[in-house]
Amino acid sequence: MYQKTLIAGWGDMDFNAHMRNTAYLDKSADVRMMYFAERGFPMSEFRRMKLGPVVKKDELEYFREANLLEDLVVTMSLAGLSEDGSRMKLRNDFLVAGKLGARVSSLAGWLDLEQRKLVCPPEPLLAALRDLAHSEDFVVLPNSSR
Image 1 (cartoon, rainbow, N blue to C red):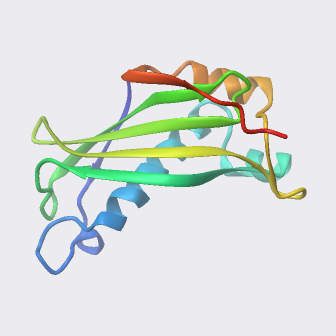
Image 2 (tube, rainbow, N blue to C red):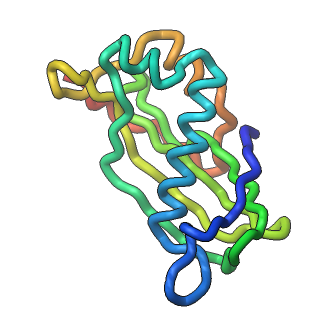
């Protein structure tokens, strides 16, 4: 299971003194991009390929509060993938003191930055996706490339 340890920082807090919803989305995106960078796809490579991940839908569920300066173990798994790799569902679980604090599920695809349409990823990028641990509720998604 891919994971990174982050902290709930000052800028992540909301008026109620716990982590704000957009901070979970930001940290999920950071962990995803860390994964791709470690697999040979840093931001410079995405720019070179003129390709980028695009999120169609985010779903955030809360289970336990995260407070200022608490460690967050953020995992990433594959909750869904189309056969051609054009569509994916990525899952980030946030563990607070060893217990599930929040879950972000994001439905995404790959956007050709010149043609502005969804495309299939190159084989090495698709292989990086397929190498992710699958969530218990993994599903095969319909293809969305044109």
